[in-house]
Image (tube, rainbow, N blue to C red; front, side):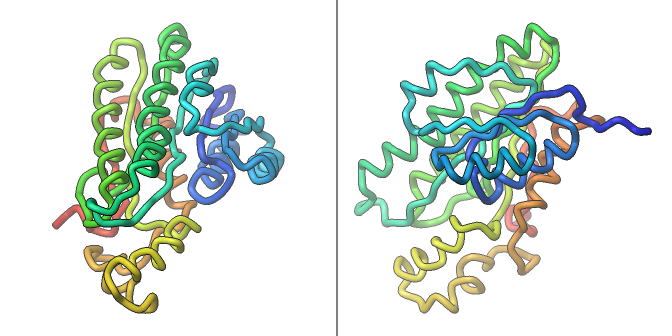
Amino acid sequence: MTSLPLAGRTAFVTGSGSGIGAAIAARLAADGAMVTCVDVNSDAVNAVADRVGGIPLVLDLADTAAVAELTVDTDILVSNAGIQHVAPLHEFPVERFDFMMRLMLHTPFLLVRAALPAMYARGWGRVVHISSAHGLRASAFKSAYVMAKHGTEGLSKVTALEGAPHGVTSNCVNPGYVRTPLVQQQIADQARAHGLPEDEVLDKIILARSAIKRMLEPEEVANAVAYVVGPGSDLMTGASLSLDGGWTAQ
C-alpha cells in the first residue's frame, strides 16, 4: 500500500473557511497532512475543519497583535487569506488600505517569522504564499491588492534564501481569476469602476489578458500547492508558479 505523500506532516492554512483556502485544506488533508484551518468566520472554518478532519482556529488575521502572539509549529505554512477592493488611487479609502496591508502583508510576515524556528529545528519546511498574477503585473484601481501581492513576492524570495540552508523552501502560487465569491464580487466592482454592464466585465476586463478564456477552479490552485509542498519539489524555491491562462506571458 502506497503511503500518502504528506503522511505525518502538519499544515497551517489561512483563509480556509471558503474558496481557495478550503480547497487547499481539503487537498493537503487528502494527501495525509493534519491541517489547521484558520479563518475569521467561525461557522465556515469549523465546517471545513470537520469535513477534512482538521483543527479549526478562529482568528481575525488582520489583528496583527493577536497574530504576533501565535505559536505556529507546522511543517507547511500556506498564507492564503486576502480580500480585494476596487477604487481609483485618489479615492481609495485609507482605512481599507491599512486593513489590507495588515491582512495581506504584515500577517504573512508574522506567520513566517513564527513558523521558521520549528521548521529550522526539524530541517524541513514548506512556505507557500497564494499570490496572484497581480504579484507579477498590475491593474488599474487595485493599488492595495497589487502592493500587497508584490510585497508577498519579495517576502517569499527572502524566505527562500534564508531557509535554504535549513531545508525550508518558499514559493508563491500565482493564479489569475479563480471562481470564488471574492471574484464574483469583483465583477460588480469592476462594472462600476469601468462603467460597463456586469455581463460584459468577464470578457472585456476579467479575462481580457488571458490566452485561455476561463476562470480557474479553486481545486486547480490546490493541486499546484500540493505539488509545491510534495515529493519532487525540493529544488523549487524562490519561484512564482503562474496559473493565469497565459496572462503574464504577454
